[in-house]
Length: 381
Image (cartoon, helix red, strand yellow):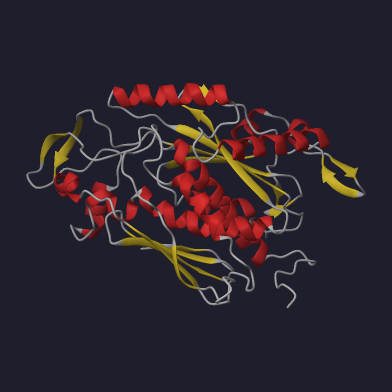
């Protein structure tokens, strides 16, 4: 089971939804970095379940226990960093029927086909979105290292159902658009962790109302999360399979419910001409920079100095209260399934910090693997 990824920065995710704990091991962190535990806790709070009306009622403290990888001063020491998050609010009885009758849209059937009943069923086991908690631990730490180098990351719920937020001003790359983008990123931080993660407060109100409507109907709804990183210098990343976009994609597609991913202008490039899609260069403050950002921050797998921008689409939560058609794997007959348990009517709002975590891990791994000539991650002692 592949639960490890990364090159210079190697991350392993472990645990199941209802196991004693979930956690991660991070190898390759630069040594001597003083970890801000309060900032990490605040980041984890944004993903934690049961904090608001639009998420699952399951409540977990998501307290991070770092058991190795830091010295007595709280700095990274060069050893692998291991972190645990205890599972304290599980109700495994809600899933008794699922080893026999698989949920449509979930991995129950494919897991049964592969492991023939040996898989851990309650809560989805290792397939559960619960495993995004340790992903956010790794991403929260990577984010701090990047911020110390001037790289800042933010995400928002761009769309829930038919309701849409204003997009990041990151496709253009002028001085004015960058200033506006920074204002958007700051506005998002001011609304967290309790506010709906949108740039427009009115859009957030509409999205929250739609989520409550589908919850009352026993249904769910999908959405799009848009994520941006500013301040990454040109020259980070590598060609082809070591490219920034490929590195991001590998992490993003490990997030449950993600079904599509696009960078920069994304799928709209199919209707453009080269004269429209190409990002022209200009000199700004004595440095060559792209004047627009259809490429989404990288060319040939290598950063070009513009904001790195991606959007990921998340499907409607498969676990809904309505009766669904399925099959009984024991009798070989068709069956009807009613799902019990506690589930998000829409995963998009809680996927916002998860997208930021994916971006942070991928960019730090790319920077450590393919550093610009002037990069030096070892602090002066």
